[in-house]
Image 1 (cartoon, rainbow, N blue to C red):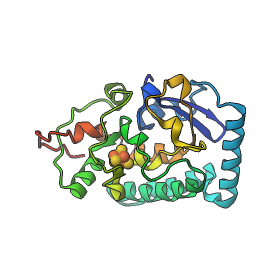
Image 2: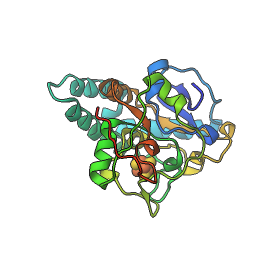
Image 3: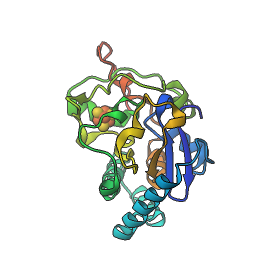
Amino acid sequence: MRKRHTSIAGSVEIIRTGTDAIHTSLPSTLEDGGTRPNACGPLNIEQHEMVRQKIRAMLAAKPFMQIPEMTRAVSRVIGENASIRSRAARLQILADKCVDALTPYSACRPGCTHCCHFAVAICATEAEALAKASGRTIASVPVRELSSVESAISGGRQPPCPFLADGRCSVYAVRPMSCRLHHSLDATPTQCDVDLPPEQSHVPKYQMKPLELGYLSLMLNQVWGDIREFFPQNETIQIGRSA
Ligand code: SF4
């Protein structure tokens, strides 16, 4: 995959933003199953130890963040006799709970908008929720094989997300899964800066593959695209495509 670069070391996932930034792991996880080998080089020793200490502390405080526990929780939701929308909403709530567990250790701060300048992959159901919350119309987005979505979306610095207003997310309650799961366990948000060259940008994350893959399994047959494709700034096209 050419636009998002990850390495997995235990429960630490490193994403490389820089000129290749893309705000999703959904298509790539189909291919690598969360086991992609180290593709962007390790953190330095101090960073690595800091991140490991954070994860140890977080797991001690929040045992449900252990991957087997998370896998069981996701499986329970996936197996429910409920609509896709309902189960997807349950997974979003679970994602929020997981990211809340990471918040004390995260570099993410109100007013930081680095990740709102990444490419942000969303599906049609997420677009509909955004349209309902914002009153905006959904543009027609081409049907693409899921495996080709990531390569169809531009990497590097993007125009601000259409829902970014005064440095804040104006649709926070219904923000897409990609946004919910993004975080950095670094000391500062600096590494998320999309203007950093990829080789200098190593954003350490806690890998939450059960959530990503579970959500993807529900949304597999949907139309996917960048959030700016669904909501172009000029809003000239008004044909929504349902899931
Ligand atoms: S939906 Fe909100 S959090 Fe996600 S990229 Fe847009 S402004 Fe940022």
